[in-house]
Image (tube, rainbow, N blue to C red; front, side):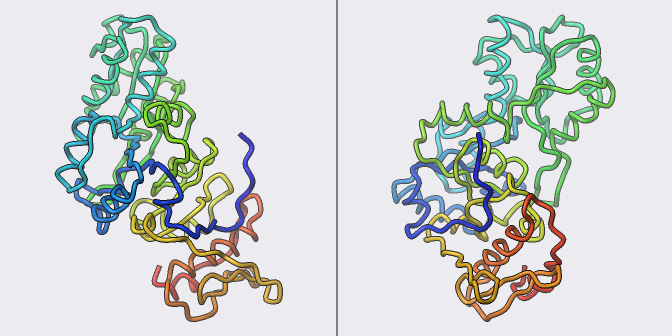
Length: 345
């Protein structure tokens, strides 16, 4: 789908929870980290839901079942049903089922979520490359994933068995920091075999299709913390997105984002769902961009921030406009350090 190159964040006179019918929320780094709720997440989601917005939880993590995810969310204080959860395990299971006959054997390299999703599609999960699998399905297996499982994948893929991956997230956020994700494990098998899998998860179309099929969203808003999955997936699907700075992406990475990684909106956390989003104005006289009390521009290759705004996020929005306009197709040499220091970001 052809998209217009975004050169500044969008604005909304209404709160995002009023302007969009469904929030397609990533989980890790957005709702929780390390299993614990991120600050302001629970109360923000409850308020958005009570105001009429549907909440759907869309995760590239294929480890857990929708039932387990819904139970976890409910324990955190956000009541959720299994039907509210869409996983990359479901997306890859649908992808495989469209290419194989009912009952076909699939070698599973991953956790319970992948086993359950494959069975729901009428496929037969197996554990060994010697079980004559018709496909290999690889998803995040958690900290307990062993080298032996990756070897089974390599044996089967090396013999020419079609290979599918739930997602390619190289990292995942945890309560102790950033940890290797499924993409890192997939890379191990790729190095061993010289082959590449067919991938279902964000930002690729199978995951977006799965989400829309299951939610029926008409005006969805993707909410995520990753530029290369959540935001790129929204771009590919032709829908708007909100980036929250509670997970993987920081302000420096946002300012350097190439066009496919630029969100429509940016906010500190999920409270951004509950408020209007201010407009970023171009100022012809200064050659810069103003949002709230902040003025941002590029001068001698560096981002300059002027003013004394009350809201640091307004300053970041202005800086995004200046950086993205200067960057063109994504080549950005703007030094953002001093400007971001003024905002405490």
